[in-house]
Length: 317
Image (cartoon, rainbow, N blue to C red; front, side, top):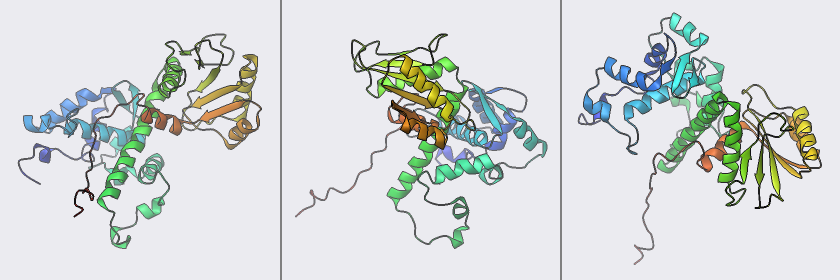
């Protein structure tokens, strides 16, 4: 690596995991302050501090600190508290009590939550098993991925991590924020057309089991009713909640509804939705986050890579 590259002096994100965890040892920490304090502690010069990603929107060092925090969170060592803030968890405190000399991905792999996360990141399409992914390189298949395959694999890893981050943010937000999010997402997807007040969150006392509604025409003759359940990852929605929502749709004389959760639906819940006489669409947490990404709700494009290939027609002679 060129010695003229300011980023060459910046530690990689795994080397920053232990310092980031220690930064939260005394209580709630603000990620922006952690970035500045770690830059001071590492005595980074102005060039290294100011080195930007290709997008020009974020510094390399800040990006690596954020990734370190993200991976620590996936292992359950830190947790988000509010926007831009995080704190150490009891598990994180136990780890620091052992005085580790380094925390990296190999270290975090001892925690089941982190292994599950890296399995999803490495294989969002269920391409390999975790045991296969940990096979020693010398025993792995000799075939090397093409540059295109490497690029797309990296994109999947970034997007899968973004899915997890979005869900963490939504679960930490107030309930009324979640309800507004669903309405905003449906409007972004084209439901409600161009009617200014086509979508609105309800979520008030006496809403009769409905959290939101989308008017699909100017007169409100065709409506989609919404039920939103902001649950933790281990708290699945069962068939009882689906039947309750069905009853609410019946009282509203509605023909269709949308049930959204930040967790998952049990198999029996999905079967119940299929067999009921009204059309009820179920969206779980992972699907919700991917819809948010696809429609740029709660996220934005940071960088666009243009991949160019030879124009065969041009060279036809």
